[in-house]
Image 1 (tube, rainbow, N blue to C red):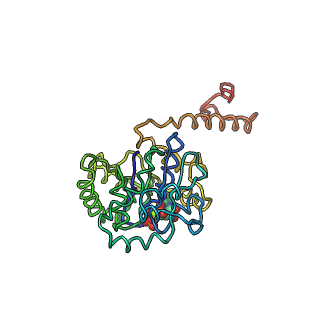
Image 2: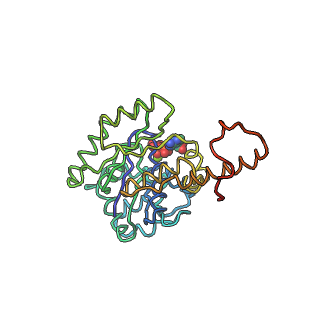
Image 3: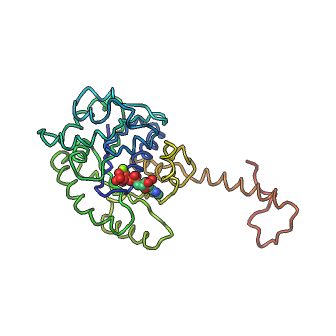
Length: 297
Ligand SMILES: Nc1ncnc2c1ncn2[C@@H]1O[C@H](COP(=O)(O)OP(=O)(O)OP(=O)(O)O)[C@@H](O)[C@H]1O
Ligand SMILES: [Mg+2]
């Protein structure tokens, strides 16, 4: 099982949004996916339409009681093949409790072991800190994705974060040190500054930066209020396409060409315009196609 931790100690950079929607996109591509909510804020749990306070068993039990509790914690979601290991605010107390336990960084890794037989991929949504919960995620994961907001301040803490990731991976995953990717989020193609940050990140970090970027999109902010991933909330949006592209990049697959949709849409619009303007004289030069040549859809 591949386990991907979404990590950044900076708050609000898109960890939860990327976790939910990438997990959903991986499930859409036929993978069995487990999303682990490791943030006491429980945003991934809420974003997938669940009430965190309704759970008797949560990720807290997986960490505290270890092997054997995972199956009583996992719940289905409204996405086929995507399950959730929810959490609630109780998880916040784990930080303090774990301080007294030796080998405390290994607890999540051990608790998640039974998932390996049930899922192809596991995505862990981390809290905005480099505390014991995030350490557990880094140890439990085979890969790390760092969402980075395309913003000047976002680059500030990145050095410390990458150093922490390097130290933990050197100790626990020396064979897969390179499995770290930086994901640009909140990208605005029309903003020169956003494009500049993007370029600088690529110059500085090279292949570490995913080809895929997540654009700023109101659909991503709206989807959690419907308790859905953006793939069902706005299936034809750019936000959905971005997350599908990221899933493909993670899987090393080629995304379906969006041309299929675009071409269909283009023909639909052409047809509509032809009906609308039928009988209206249009100067030859302004016409990019002959109405008679449009194929029926
Ligand atoms: N690409 C985007 N475009 C527009 N809004 C976004 C985008 N990504 C995330 N958001 C919104 O920004 C806010 C922060 O995003 P999110 O919760 O995913 O960040 P986070 O890193 O998980 O935050 P935290 O550190 O608090 O856990 C949310 O309201 C979310 O809906
Ligand atoms: Mg979050």
